Length: 573
Image 1: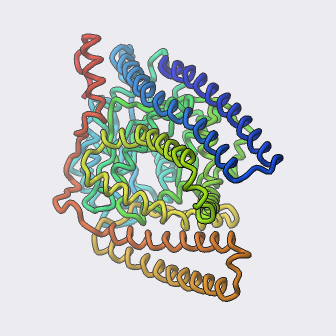
Image 2: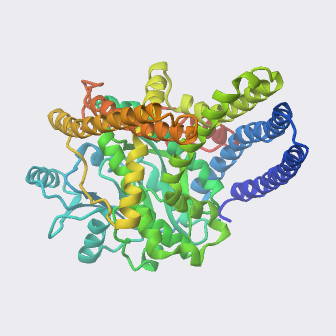
Image 3: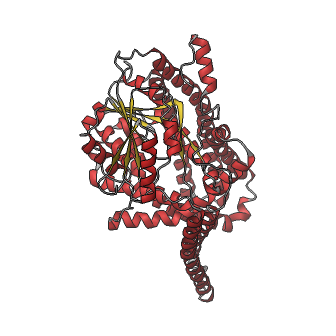
């Protein structure tokens, strides 16, 4: 195991999971037995509600237990993990000769010189800086040429033809330049790598605790641009990274590989033939190969890097769907069932879930229609069941408690302010609804027709282009809204005049909900497309250097406690 805190986490989490599974099995046996007894004895509706009350109360206990346990233990284990990381950073003996790091800044019409300049302020000095330019835009090419002239310590490699994707860019660079390195540092064009990241991360590769370490990814915060969508989704992105830091424990050895600020060892690169797997989602492919070859990895929490979250809703949907359809392509090709190992179960299931995501939406719609039918037809009985209603309230409270502890507590630490919380909630609902139709469409396209997303580079940042794209997308969705509206009117009119409502009530409710959800999905996309054009920060300067100001994300409290306890001077920011 990489770190003692991870060993401890796995042991405790194992016994917690074992206890919960045994408890659930016992509750399931009791529940099924009671329901079977009611069926055999032809029990009344009141007895069914009584059984439901018992089940709801019994299921409340594991929810309460998990919420309290995770909120206390996760916080404690995170502190231990951070302490171990600091121990390694300050106590690992480095070789006398500094290891060579090659930083490859890959671009495709998305050059951001301000971000690169800040990244180049690394406290680790033996770094060779390269720009690998796969751009097709002449304006960007000229901008890169001017930058290299002014910054003599930056080398330039220009691809012989436009890059297809990031993996193609990296592979072409590695094949033709053939750089000599001990460690390879890669990032996205919009990334600002923390100045101490390389200094800190490289020490883990020389620590006795980290055997067979493939790569280290940086913990990430995200900055926002001047538009409303990117501002409102900042919390979502940062919160996701913070959760993934906890996944560093929960998925065994393997967290996600983030091409944004990731340091890879030369030994690992040699093992994969110094070639990143081809595809738009090279992060996932490389991670999958590392898992398959039994390498380890780590997310480093101490140095918080910055990256840019999606600028527009269009870009957001495009990126997420590209991730899913390329995941499907990988799984169809590799058939990883052959080498599945329990050690990487969560990673395995996470990848597998891309196949079932569309079905989650469909099942949710069906369940919602069934619940709606039950409450509509049995409300007279339900409202008299006081204990049942209390049970539901308790159950919802337990879920809300667990969710608030695991999500909103982190969110409040990451980004404070009522307005930001309000915007975050609204946007979450909107892009969740908007995602329904897009996900189902992409699933059918990728699984059955083998049509995958193409690499298109970063979107333009000019407001006029944003409005043009928003208008084009809105026109398509207005048409779909019109089609769904007509279909719903015809459906409801037909059922009414043919007196089919009573005989086909389930189907009637399901169809209305199904196409109603699609209607709302298109409506949400229209709203998001227009909100993406609203300027939020008029003073935004893309050249301005950015620093992490949030003490929580900088682990400032934990660092100060560690330094005071061990009487160590601050060597990293």
